[in-house]
Length: 190
View 1 (cartoon, rainbow, N blue to C red):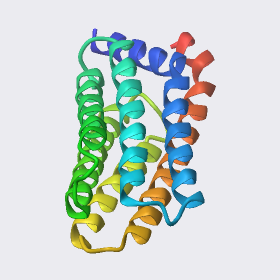
View 2: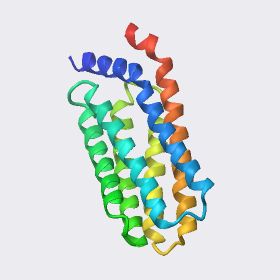
View 3: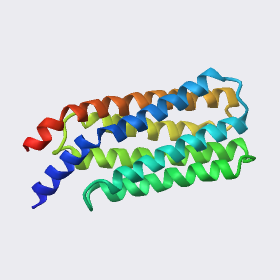
């Protein structure tokens, strides 16, 4: 029975590859916008981050509820809720200080990274190349730790850090999405 659930999870992941791709594209778009406007004010950064976190959270929740019950769907839903709440807080409270923004983004990155690593470990027997998900998770955790370790970084450096993280994370998600897309025919044969 557990193998049947794993096969269904594989099939649904392959059929919903486009949700991973949308998350990757949203991250890349956010990162590019951060680089295009390097002298962006902290307020604009808050709104850019808030918009990205809301879109990412909604897509994670949709992905969680379009899959089978149990397994990764509960973690993905929780991760989506955390992302959604982080985005809402950022937009509703735009006057937060740089330190508060750093803590918010760092916590979001660390929690999201941990969930990505856990998901990769749980899916290691179901999918190949789970290292992409592990790498994305490790990148998220390290990014969060760097933000906490350097709380007084300038706004420009913060924009570049956030933008660079978003682009790399988005590329990793897109790469995973297209690998998963290639498994669609294989998943129906399993």
